[in-house]
Length: 611
Image (cartoon, rainbow, N blue to C red):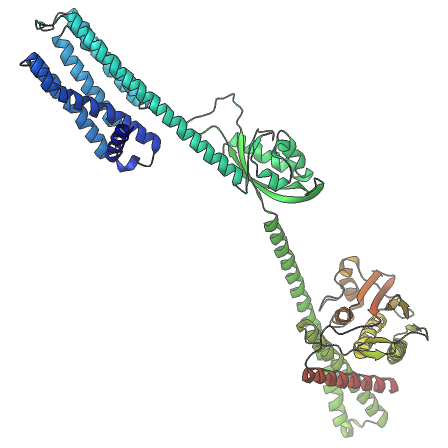
């Protein structure tokens, strides 16, 4: 084994750099160089012994021994260039030339050397190249034909006297047989190397298929699964054997099955890669049917390549790679929802700005116009009644401006998270009655009956009284605004479990179903109501109510039908506790601000009521 290892190391050192990392090609190069180098070296080493035993050689013997340098030169050529096919063809030409030269001087086709022509195609077969085998076979056949013609025409020189023909024939057959045996061992070594490499590659691919997170599968054009990798158990939650046949197809979502089969069929017929996304049912951890996941499948034909075209009547199979893309799909859906929400917000703000320009311009024009008229009372000869009417209109316009600005400031604080509640015990019934009294005049002017139903035994609740009053004022004011003359607004309150439930019902125009889901979004106004009634507003009332209710840990529900009215239900906990106390200076500042605004708002409402 030591000698064989030394020989192998020497041959490896002679290999061309381009083939050192290809095991099968390296084995072919070694199989080419080894017999030529060893045979030539042994023959050259035996030449002195031959001379000692035979004496002075003849001219033919000298030429034959000199020809043994050719295999060494060919091995050197292959070692330097790596051109295996060229070396094989030149080797066939060299052997054929030597055989022809010896055969011509030793009897032609009957020469002992003619048997060596059989070795040429056998040796070429080790190259696994049809071109080399064809060239070598052509050279061998051409040499045989030439020897037959020369022998038949008796154009051969006279054979030298000496050793009998039988001895030469025996030597020729024996040497050719030994060389053929060496070729056989070389072929067996190449075959063993090829099988070993195939096993290694197969093991690598099996290892890759086993440990890949993606699933590799082989299908027929009709979707039948022929093979599926073990990663399918992680993807689908079942043993891969259960997915063979139509097991995978049965798990594809019914809606996605046509796309799944179309992709496989197109890949089988068109010979090009196809990609499709579909939903696949995944079983749970205990074998129960789970939810659907999104899977991307890339498939391409397994046969029909350019070097090995599939038969015309053969059924082309398809190899596919399946990958879980559920997270990507969810991200795409989230992005799409975010885009839609952004577009809605942009549209709402655009409508808000359009409405706000009117909301601010109308009362400002009234304030400027009536104030200028009062300033010119001497010229216009205004009496006391007119001055009082104009002053009231200026006051109403100012109140409207203040409510708009307060709504915007409150919404800004709520969205930025800087709006803080100041919880304290208070009586909800008195706050409810007070708010309804403040809006009674507005209801009367609109021809709407305002009905209040609040039990006298309502318990005290812990919460922000200013926020509670703002919730009631916004809800009741909204209900009055969108109720036709002759309609009614009913405000009820009661205790359900540990929550105070306030319900505001009206018999107004109602809200369309498409707009109902977006009630409470900032700057949003119900389209059906807005376009029918042409009421002005910022669209912040219900949004502020929703935010304040949420800050109290309550919830708000809106039920409405177009033409039948709307019912808004607010449920607040009886005992609200602030989640975290803010620093004292900020808290006091917010409380003072809240108190000042509450006082200002109440003062304005009292002025309006007295007016």
